[in-house]
Image (cartoon, rainbow, N blue to C red; front, side, top):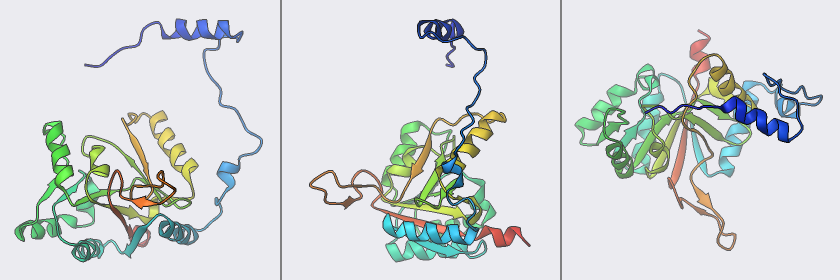
Length: 243
Protein backbone atom coordinates (compact mmCIF):
# COMPACT_ATOMS: atom_id res chain seq x y z
CA UNK A 1 0.00 0.00 0.00
CA UNK A 2 1.41 3.38 -1.03
CA UNK A 3 1.59 5.96 1.74
CA UNK A 4 0.88 9.68 1.50
CA UNK A 5 2.33 12.82 3.08
CA UNK A 6 -0.01 15.38 4.63
CA UNK A 7 0.66 18.90 5.99
CA UNK A 8 4.26 18.72 4.79
CA UNK A 9 4.44 22.38 3.71
CA UNK A 10 2.91 23.62 6.96
CA UNK A 11 5.32 21.51 8.97
CA UNK A 12 8.40 22.76 7.08
CA UNK A 13 7.15 26.37 7.23
CA UNK A 14 6.85 26.10 11.01
CA UNK A 15 10.44 24.84 11.28
CA UNK A 16 11.65 27.71 9.10
CA UNK A 17 9.76 30.18 11.27
CA UNK A 18 11.31 28.80 14.45
CA UNK A 19 14.76 29.07 12.88
CA UNK A 20 14.12 32.66 11.84
CA UNK A 21 14.29 31.89 8.14
CA UNK A 22 12.11 33.37 5.41
CA UNK A 23 9.73 30.83 3.93
CA UNK A 24 10.47 30.09 0.28
CA UNK A 25 8.39 28.10 -2.16
CA UNK A 26 11.48 26.82 -3.96
CA UNK A 27 15.02 26.00 -3.05
CA UNK A 28 17.81 27.29 -5.23
CA UNK A 29 20.97 25.27 -5.50
CA UNK A 30 24.03 27.19 -4.37
CA UNK A 31 26.65 28.14 -6.95
CA UNK A 32 30.04 27.35 -5.51
CA UNK A 33 33.03 29.44 -6.54
CA UNK A 34 35.34 26.44 -6.41
CA UNK A 35 34.22 23.02 -7.65
CA UNK A 36 37.15 20.73 -7.02
CA UNK A 37 34.84 17.74 -6.99
CA UNK A 38 34.22 18.28 -10.71
CA UNK A 39 37.73 19.30 -11.66
CA UNK A 40 39.55 16.23 -10.34
CA UNK A 41 40.37 13.88 -13.27
CA UNK A 42 37.83 15.65 -15.48
CA UNK A 43 40.30 16.00 -18.35
CA UNK A 44 41.58 12.43 -18.20
CA UNK A 45 41.09 10.35 -21.32
CA UNK A 46 39.04 7.17 -21.13
CA UNK A 47 42.22 5.09 -21.38
CA UNK A 48 43.75 7.02 -18.48
CA UNK A 49 40.60 6.39 -16.44
CA UNK A 50 40.78 2.68 -17.26
CA UNK A 51 44.41 2.54 -16.14
CA UNK A 52 43.54 4.31 -12.91
CA UNK A 53 40.62 1.94 -12.39
CA UNK A 54 42.77 -1.17 -12.88
CA UNK A 55 45.47 0.09 -10.51
CA UNK A 56 42.89 0.83 -7.84
CA UNK A 57 41.36 -2.64 -8.23
CA UNK A 58 44.73 -4.11 -7.22
CA UNK A 59 44.40 -2.21 -3.95
CA UNK A 60 40.90 -3.53 -3.23
CA UNK A 61 41.71 -7.20 -3.94
CA UNK A 62 39.66 -7.35 -7.13
CA UNK A 63 40.69 -9.08 -10.35
CA UNK A 64 39.96 -7.30 -13.63
CA UNK A 65 39.59 -9.32 -16.83
CA UNK A 66 39.46 -7.29 -20.04
CA UNK A 67 37.48 -8.56 -23.00
CA UNK A 68 35.54 -7.55 -26.11
CA UNK A 69 31.75 -7.68 -26.52
CA UNK A 70 32.07 -10.77 -28.75
CA UNK A 71 34.40 -12.62 -26.36
CA UNK A 72 32.64 -11.59 -23.13
CA UNK A 73 30.72 -14.88 -22.57
CA UNK A 74 33.88 -16.96 -23.11
CA UNK A 75 35.87 -14.72 -20.76
CA UNK A 76 33.23 -15.14 -18.08
CA UNK A 77 33.13 -18.92 -18.58
CA UNK A 78 36.92 -19.12 -18.32
CA UNK A 79 36.87 -17.04 -15.15
CA UNK A 80 34.32 -19.35 -13.56
CA UNK A 81 36.12 -22.52 -14.66
CA UNK A 82 39.32 -21.22 -13.09
CA UNK A 83 37.63 -20.57 -9.75
CA UNK A 84 35.56 -23.77 -9.72
CA UNK A 85 32.05 -24.57 -10.93
CA UNK A 86 29.00 -23.82 -8.85
CA UNK A 87 25.41 -22.51 -8.87
CA UNK A 88 24.87 -19.13 -10.51
CA UNK A 89 22.34 -16.37 -9.93
CA UNK A 90 22.11 -13.34 -12.22
CA UNK A 91 20.11 -10.16 -12.31
CA UNK A 92 17.35 -9.63 -14.85
CA UNK A 93 19.25 -7.36 -17.22
CA UNK A 94 18.84 -6.97 -20.99
CA UNK A 95 22.61 -6.66 -21.36
CA UNK A 96 23.03 -10.41 -20.75
CA UNK A 97 21.12 -10.96 -23.99
CA UNK A 98 22.85 -8.05 -25.73
CA UNK A 99 26.30 -9.60 -25.19
CA UNK A 100 25.23 -13.19 -25.90
CA UNK A 101 25.49 -14.69 -22.41
CA UNK A 102 22.26 -16.73 -22.55
CA UNK A 103 23.50 -19.49 -24.91
CA UNK A 104 26.47 -20.03 -22.60
CA UNK A 105 24.16 -20.20 -19.57
CA UNK A 106 22.02 -22.78 -21.39
CA UNK A 107 25.09 -24.95 -22.08
CA UNK A 108 26.07 -24.72 -18.42
CA UNK A 109 22.59 -25.89 -17.42
CA UNK A 110 22.97 -28.85 -19.80
CA UNK A 111 26.18 -29.68 -17.93
CA UNK A 112 24.23 -29.75 -14.67
CA UNK A 113 25.10 -26.31 -13.32
CA UNK A 114 22.21 -24.40 -11.74
CA UNK A 115 21.53 -21.05 -13.41
CA UNK A 116 18.79 -18.84 -11.97
CA UNK A 117 17.80 -15.19 -12.33
CA UNK A 118 16.30 -12.86 -9.75
CA UNK A 119 12.57 -13.23 -10.28
CA UNK A 120 10.38 -10.34 -9.16
CA UNK A 121 7.27 -12.56 -9.45
CA UNK A 122 8.63 -15.16 -7.02
CA UNK A 123 8.22 -14.90 -3.24
CA UNK A 124 10.93 -12.68 -1.74
CA UNK A 125 12.42 -15.44 0.40
CA UNK A 126 12.81 -17.70 -2.63
CA UNK A 127 15.13 -15.21 -4.33
CA UNK A 128 17.11 -14.76 -1.14
CA UNK A 129 17.54 -18.53 -0.76
CA UNK A 130 18.74 -18.82 -4.35
CA UNK A 131 21.26 -16.03 -3.75
CA UNK A 132 22.43 -17.70 -0.55
CA UNK A 133 23.02 -21.04 -2.32
CA UNK A 134 24.79 -19.48 -5.31
CA UNK A 135 28.54 -19.63 -5.69
CA UNK A 136 28.41 -16.83 -8.28
CA UNK A 137 26.32 -13.68 -8.33
CA UNK A 138 26.61 -11.98 -11.73
CA UNK A 139 25.40 -8.45 -12.43
CA UNK A 140 26.07 -5.44 -14.65
CA UNK A 141 27.38 -2.13 -13.32
CA UNK A 142 25.41 1.05 -14.09
CA UNK A 143 28.34 3.38 -13.39
CA UNK A 144 31.95 2.63 -12.51
CA UNK A 145 34.29 4.93 -10.56
CA UNK A 146 37.88 5.03 -11.78
CA UNK A 147 39.13 6.76 -8.64
CA UNK A 148 38.13 4.00 -6.22
CA UNK A 149 37.42 0.88 -8.29
CA UNK A 150 33.79 1.16 -7.25
CA UNK A 151 30.79 -0.22 -9.13
CA UNK A 152 27.44 1.56 -8.83
CA UNK A 153 24.31 -0.57 -9.05
CA UNK A 154 20.66 0.42 -8.79
CA UNK A 155 18.19 -2.02 -7.29
CA UNK A 156 15.10 -2.79 -9.35
CA UNK A 157 12.54 -5.56 -9.66
CA UNK A 158 15.01 -7.82 -11.43
CA UNK A 159 17.92 -7.07 -9.12
CA UNK A 160 17.41 -7.36 -5.40
CA UNK A 161 19.94 -6.31 -2.78
CA UNK A 162 20.77 -9.86 -1.71
CA UNK A 163 22.26 -10.52 -5.15
CA UNK A 164 25.25 -8.38 -4.18
CA UNK A 165 25.90 -9.77 -0.72
CA UNK A 166 24.97 -13.45 -0.39
CA UNK A 167 26.79 -15.36 -3.20
CA UNK A 168 30.33 -16.49 -2.41
CA UNK A 169 31.80 -14.95 -5.58
CA UNK A 170 30.71 -11.60 -6.96
CA UNK A 171 31.16 -10.98 -10.70
CA UNK A 172 30.40 -7.55 -12.14
CA UNK A 173 30.28 -7.02 -15.90
CA UNK A 174 31.50 -3.48 -16.58
CA UNK A 175 31.00 -1.71 -19.87
CA UNK A 176 33.96 0.56 -20.55
CA UNK A 177 31.56 3.36 -21.47
CA UNK A 178 30.22 3.41 -17.88
CA UNK A 179 33.59 4.41 -16.37
CA UNK A 180 33.58 7.94 -14.94
CA UNK A 181 36.27 9.74 -12.92
CA UNK A 182 34.67 9.69 -9.47
CA UNK A 183 31.48 9.64 -7.42
CA UNK A 184 30.31 13.15 -8.34
CA UNK A 185 29.71 12.18 -11.98
CA UNK A 186 27.71 9.08 -11.07
CA UNK A 187 25.64 10.85 -8.40
CA UNK A 188 24.92 13.73 -10.77
CA UNK A 189 23.76 11.35 -13.52
CA UNK A 190 21.47 9.51 -11.09
CA UNK A 191 20.03 12.83 -9.90
CA UNK A 192 19.40 14.05 -13.46
CA UNK A 193 17.53 10.84 -14.26
CA UNK A 194 15.12 11.45 -11.37
CA UNK A 195 14.69 15.11 -12.35
CA UNK A 196 13.77 13.95 -15.87
CA UNK A 197 11.01 11.70 -14.57
CA UNK A 198 12.64 8.36 -13.69
CA UNK A 199 11.43 6.82 -10.47
CA UNK A 200 13.99 6.99 -7.69
CA UNK A 201 15.37 3.54 -6.91
CA UNK A 202 14.82 1.91 -3.53
CA UNK A 203 18.54 1.32 -3.10
CA UNK A 204 21.72 2.37 -4.87
CA UNK A 205 24.84 0.38 -4.02
CA UNK A 206 28.42 1.63 -4.22
CA UNK A 207 30.55 -1.53 -3.98
CA UNK A 208 34.34 -1.57 -3.96
CA UNK A 209 35.57 -5.15 -4.28
CA UNK A 210 34.91 -8.02 -1.85
CA UNK A 211 33.74 -7.40 1.69
CA UNK A 212 36.56 -6.85 4.16
CA UNK A 213 37.22 -5.58 7.63
CA UNK A 214 40.21 -4.60 9.75
CA UNK A 215 38.24 -3.90 12.93
CA UNK A 216 40.02 -6.57 14.96
CA UNK A 217 43.58 -5.52 15.83
CA UNK A 218 43.89 -3.80 12.42
CA UNK A 219 44.32 -7.15 10.67
CA UNK A 220 42.62 -7.11 7.25
CA UNK A 221 40.24 -10.01 6.69
CA UNK A 222 38.54 -10.35 3.29
CA UNK A 223 35.09 -11.90 2.94
CA UNK A 224 33.78 -11.16 6.42
CA UNK A 225 30.19 -10.16 5.70
CA UNK A 226 29.72 -10.71 1.98
CA UNK A 227 31.37 -12.24 -1.08
CA UNK A 228 34.80 -13.75 -0.46
CA UNK A 229 36.05 -12.69 -3.89
CA UNK A 230 35.12 -10.10 -6.48
CA UNK A 231 35.90 -10.19 -10.19
CA UNK A 232 35.29 -7.43 -12.72
CA UNK A 233 34.74 -8.34 -16.37
CA UNK A 234 35.66 -5.18 -18.28
CA UNK A 235 33.92 -5.14 -21.68
CA UNK A 236 35.34 -2.75 -24.27
CA UNK A 237 31.95 -1.72 -25.66
CA UNK A 238 33.25 1.61 -26.96
CA UNK A 239 34.99 -0.05 -29.92
CA UNK A 240 31.70 -1.70 -30.80
CA UNK A 241 29.86 1.62 -30.48
CA UNK A 242 32.34 3.43 -32.71
CA UNK A 243 31.83 1.10 -35.65
